[in-house]
Image 1 (cartoon, rainbow, N blue to C red):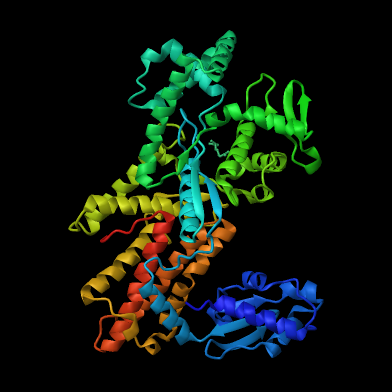
Image 2: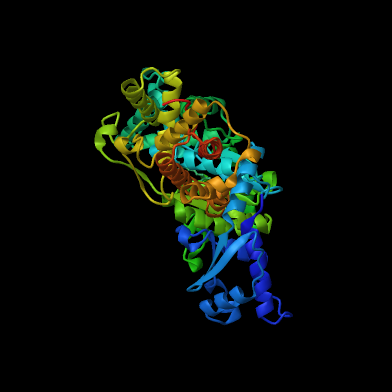
Length: 578
Ligand code: ARG
């Protein structure tokens, strides 16, 4: 498929060269120019726009003057670009519509994985997501990292990157020593097999209460931790039991969501690797003693103090994360290591990324560390709490979503086949989409009426639009061949808006990886579904004129295909009927 953006970037680069003394090498290369090219929100501003203020500094000229100069000198093939206009400091490019349509429909037919590419080939991307804490609730924040992480994973992979998805389980720390102590005392009273996390939480609360009454119990807990660290059989077995039972609970959620990991490597894995981290920091001359603790002082960088080992000798979250960076750099030679973790942990990541400079790992790894921050999900009302408190059990939430959809189906369309399966796809899809509906850094509100609104900007709306495309195609009985389509019949405003969006699919996926925000794809799918709905309401697809019908059917097919591929990348399956 012709890459219009690239073509434009090349033409701009050449025009700039002509304007400015041929010999002077421009610092800005074609790739950067291409990165600056935008797709205007408003179609009247063309298909692509180049903001010239990006060049103002280097060329020491006003943006509008630069735009005019480029406009004068630019050489473009008229078969590709119909016109170029200067508006303020922008150059707006208008692509030959028919060419764009031809290219798009051909590509849609040829490529099973339309929009996929190989730009990531040879690059390793580690994604750290989900990462709940064992013996504790998998909360709504963990749901969000799971969904965002899985979507990023899929999209990077689709663009040819080698992706490694890691669940960095919180399976280590002094709380387990307390749990062990509680279990030793009252284990028999609790039925861990049935509701492990609930029961473990009860033990945890009880032992903490006991400690409040009698501080000496804390000493027993510390002893347990020492035993655990030195590999004591009983403590280790107990800890493994807690871990396995918790993981089994989490697995139910992962199965419902359809989320997988390449590796589940918990924090405990790094406990014996922390000593080496301390050694490296010592050698680098940055490890300091502070009231018995070991720290790296980052206050000159405005990042406070990063504690590496506590005064009582136990290892700590940050140190285990540093060991994980070292391990991942050595094991995966990553180009990027993305941490999908709530914004509350921003300081933690700033600190460890700073300290990572001393771990003797390749420069590219240090540079590739990135905290992908997301906002909280807030529940719109207290109604959702399942246990009196403000905690929602995620498994219950997902199941409730499915049940609510079952009810809607029962009311609206009780005769569809495989009701249960379809309800699952819709119920789960709705929750996933809600987590990705807006820029991920923003807090998101969870409200059932909104999440399951088939007409709102929701997962079900995208699925509903998809189902519509499929029933039209079913009615027609066949999908026409791309070669037989008269593209002139698709140059009207509504059709070409739809097809332009389809052309941009790959660009959208690239944007997701540039910003590490899958909501760019969610918004796109909403735009595509809306744009198709307008087309659908204004045009009869199955109609008298055979050629018109074929062209419109093809467009319908293309929309269905992109909606399905795009949703799948977000982790959402399409129902056949709804
Ligand atoms: N277990 C942590 C939590 O629930 C998140 C871990 C994130 N990943 C990491 N490498 N620190 O808050």
